[in-house]
Length: 78
Image 1: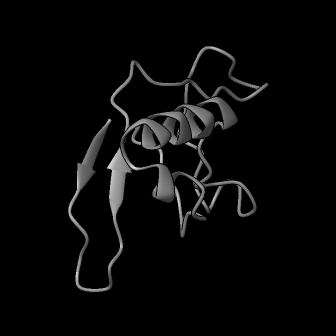
Image 2 (image 1 turned 45 degrees about the vertical axis):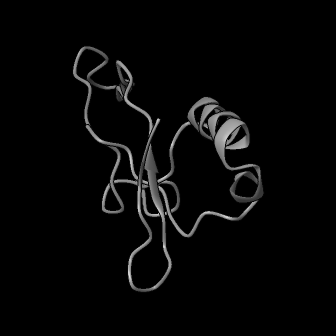
């Protein structure tokens, strides 16, 4: 996990470096395409639940008070 210091709005950015995820469509099944707000307006920028759990786990180890705070948003690097 990496963490950037808070910005002027006191927002902290955290990230986990990992091998990544694939997102295939039933019609293509061999091509992994990013899920975006254009292709999936409701879930486009959500991260997988397993990644969210891992992120909170690491936060609890280093900054327990931050671990339970709500996230303002999530992104998945493609």
